[in-house]
Amino acid sequence: MRTKLAAGNWKMNGLTEALSELAGMADAAAGASEVLICPPFTLVGAAAAAASGIAIGGQDCHAAASGAHTGDVSAAMLKDAGASHVILGHSERRTDHNERNSDVNAKCVAAWDAGLTVVLCVGESLEQREAANTLEIIGGQLAASVPDGATGHNLVIAYEPIWAIGTGKVPSTDQIGEVHDFMRARLEKRFGSGVGRSVRLLYGGSVKPSNATEIFAVSNVDGALVGGASLKAADFVPIIEALNAASQDG
Ligand code: PGA
Image (cartoon, rainbow, N blue to C red; front, side, top):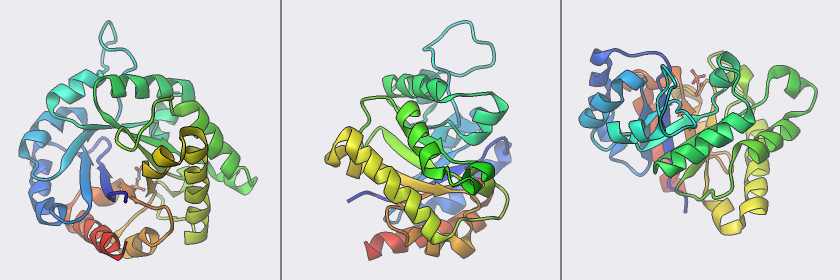
C-alpha cells in the first residue's frame, strides 16, 4: 500500500504571513494522506517550526555538498532547516536554469546523501505530446534523471505535463493513466517489482478542488503536486480531503 501524498509547491510565492495558511491545513493533514508543502527557501525553517502534521520541503538543491556556489543551497542545508523533502527537476528549473537530466540526477544523489526524499518531476511539452512522443520523453527523463538506488522512501515521481502547469489545461484521465501506468512499468523493470511498486507517482499541472477527485481515481495516481492551488488553505484543503477520501476507497 502506498500512502497517498498531497504536495504543494509554492514556487517564488510567500512572505512570513503566508505561514498562517499552514495552520488552516492542519486538520485535513491529520487524515489518511501525507501532506507536504515546499515553500521558498526563505520560509523553510519557519515553516518547519510552524507546521503541524505537514512535511516541509525545498524546491531545488545544489549537486555539491558545499562550496563556492553563490546563491545556491545544499541538500544538507535544507535538511538542517527542517526539510524532509526536495523537489528536483521541475520544468521551471529545467527551463529557467537549463537543468538537464544529468543535473537532476546529480542533485538527486546529493539529496539522498543528505537524507531527503526527492520529488522528481518529469513531463512533456505540448509539441512533444502533439508529435506523439510523450512516452518516449517520459521514459528518457526517468532513465536519465533517476539515479540507481531509488526506493519507495527516497523517491516520489511527479508527472507534470509542461502544457498543463499554471494553464488551467489538464490532460484527460486516460492520458494521465497512460503515462502513470507506463512510469510504473518502467520503475518495476529497472528497480524490481518491490521498489517499483512502492514509489509514489503524483500528477501535477492545474490540479484544483474541482478536478482533484477525478484525477485521484486514475490508476497509479498516488497524489498530486499542486502549484497555485496550494498557496491558500481554502484551495488546498479540499484537495487534501479528496485525496483522504481516495485513500479510504483504496
Ligand atoms: P500548477 O503548478 O498547479 O499551478 O499548475 C503545478 C506545478 O508546477 O508543480
